Amino acid sequence: MTHSITPQAATAAGTSPLLEVEDLAVWFPITEGVVFERHTGDVRAVDGVSFSIRRGETLGLVGESGCGKSTTGRAIVRLYKPTRGAIRIDGTDLAGLEGVELRNMRRRMQMVFQDPYASLDPRMNVASIVAEPLEIHGVGTGSERRERVGELLSTVGLDPSHAVRYPHEFSGGQRQRIGVARALALQPDLIVADEPVSALDVSIQAQIINLLGRLQDSFGLTYLFIAHDLSVVRHVSDRIAVMYLGRIVELATAKELHDRPLHPYTVALLSAIPIPDPVREVSRRRIILQGDVPSPVNPPSGCHFHTRCWLRERLGNPEQCVAEAPMPRDLAAGHQVACHFAEKTDGSAEQVLSIGRPVPSASTAPVAPPPTTAGA
Image 1 (cartoon, rainbow, N blue to C red):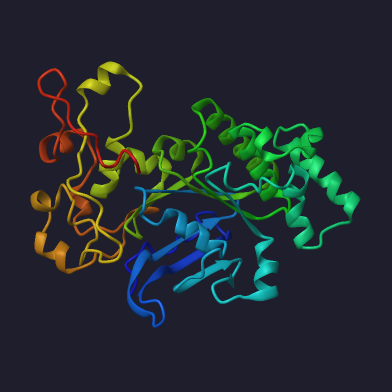
Image 2: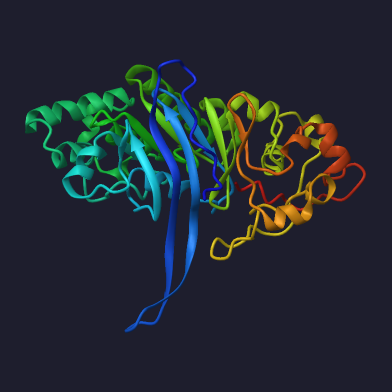
């Protein structure tokens, strides 16, 4: 039985999803011993995740560090082999593919990695880095590949004459543009962007985000955009999935999720977003989650979030949360939540103020410790 968000049907009539992920699990084995290894447990990095993405859509995937976002993205492009579940692109399941079949399907999906300093080979110049996917898949002649490299560099805003340079000669933003050019080389349908701007300065972040938007409009790309900055995700995403300890707990349109969050974890995440208004920022209330994220080696029974839930004792049924994992439910059109008492959560400031754990105003009480959600 899966306790994940069920795959979403396409909202546009007659439009089928490009990507369908169903009950995806990625467990990493824990072993002891050197000569005789013994399997002692598993790290359940992803534990039953389901969603779909329509062609041309951007799905944002957010959550705290360690919740399984990057592992999900890497499993989709088959850098990790799934423990169970299905990953379908236009109906073809990638989970069981190997060898030539998998290589051929990889032309349709590429990845932009988080760290622009670690994701480029320092011993290769830019021309070799961008042309490598073309060489691996036998696309074009040598002269055609060189011409293609120049076109790709121009597309991402770089001077084609810089193709002879090496990664250390570029800034962080320029390196990320090189990574984007490499991802575009094979004209993929799907790009998994794994926190593509988190290692960049704010001004450079805006340039890369705008670049990704222009490329999507020009080439009809489909994005899985993984990030921890909720304000960035809201700006770039059509829909947002919120992940906690290997499971998706809420999935809705970007506007619906920010206007009416229904899962207590989503409410806590949104309350941690800074407000660019000093007066409102000082007086506003924030939810401070208690304790640390449980270990994925031994996750809590029932609802994974019940050990930190700020509403369980007030609005919910504590025994049910501990004993029974909540199944995803449609509480509105396109809005799914995995919570036993999501109907009682409206995400409003009034509810947070009256029921949640508000941080006292700075003028009347000492400063509270940083929220654990800030590093999501």
